[in-house]
Image (cartoon, rainbow, N blue to C red; front, side, top):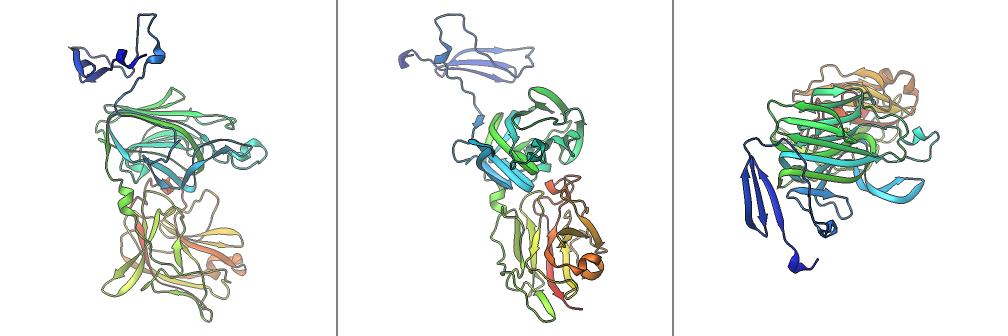
Length: 450
């Protein structure tokens, strides 16, 4: 159609008022005394001479993302996100993929307020060439989305967990509290070529979850959350996201809170052993000693802090909600028979839950502090540190690895770290604790002989 014949028509709905413009000129308005409760729009023409191929339809505050360009409208809140192949057996097809053994979260930079719809097309990334097919998809569940959130914690808004809790439940949570659920929409069968169309809609105080255009569950909030950012997330999983579309009354761009929280970490030393009677001794006055963040995505920060005027200590801080909040002790392999004593001072911030984990004889052991001891990939309880509480007070711990590890004490300790691996109640996702800003302090850490 020649440019001279083009016309720009605009139809808008403001409360009960329907307003029409043509080339920015008001051509009509109507106050509807009984507004229709609908969410769709359609174009209808009566002339056969009118070619719909000449029509370009646009809508304010509709954001459509296919990740064909640099994703400047998104920010990573956990895990690794990059364009990658979905199928290892066919490298021709690539989409945005997120993966993590803890939380993989992708947040919008923009905030969305008022009524809105957020929908995305997603699948599971193939992992290797295992047989049978199910072995290629070890975690076909937990396709999750959070809306009206703070940009840091998946548990801070309305969270929709699809086929979670081991594939048994699909639930809606409001600020971490379950407000609705069903066990009738679990993911079953072959997911090798399957795509899922997940949609969340908010209208007033009502939020709805749809999967493949079927209403799964809804919740009406008497005290609606005003709005916020949107996150696509999962845990111990690999998700493929092909397209995201968000339609909202208002979209607001401000600095994302993640940019303000992430700071440079305290310098760590290379893994080394002192030898003699003391294997490792860290005072944290000048550096992080043998400690380092276990997460490579920058979500766990190791910072310098002070107890009083001069005594330094290591502060481990969670930049986002959830994750392992883990700090490695890079002490190398050693014999717990030769160096059985582990001593340290510790302080746990309110709302933080951690344990001490030790790998010996290729098995993971958990020394309970104040977090649950379950772990998705298996973990054996190995005693506890009595009195560990998240009240911010400093306490002292002294452990004897020979007593804790028992028969495994004859094997080498190959790994040691503080953190949280519990996923049964979604603690590793920030539900029930370990929110953004949570953390713990470690001081006077030592591994020595008897």
